[in-house]
Length: 230
Image (cartoon, helix red, strand yellow):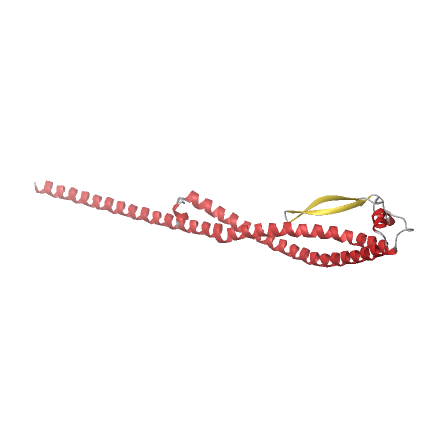
């Protein structure tokens, strides 16, 4: 009722409220569709994230196991010397793509050389095969780790956008649309009351005018009778 008192019951305001209601209804539908599509893509990313995390954790566990075996067969100085001068260099480029108005990251990597053997920064004469396996395991899981980071960040951004969209949908559905509907109902009721009041006043004025005309006619007739009697 507090909202109704702040609305002027005029036809201009009625038109304004009807336009506001139409815009709110259209916006509610669009936001609801957006929320549903975001949820669909979000769930797809969550499933991919779960699969990637399991794969990455298994790969890291295997790499750690291989490194433990390599260190067991080599001296610490030899292991440190093997990695002191890396032969390969990886650069990361981050771009963004728009998914339902959400800017999600896209990672791209570039290596200094295209040779797959450049991941080994040491010679094979003084190192064990276990060390080669550990380096290879880390190299194999590297791409999945980047994709996992990309997917997890996308999930965070989309979850935040879903929550914002959900709040907007609820605000439209439970506040703005009902308020506009109540305002329209209130204005129409007031306009109908004013119209009925105006009609009643016009009818009373008409009755008064007819009554006055009738009395005036009676007075004229009375004067005519008096004149004829004289």
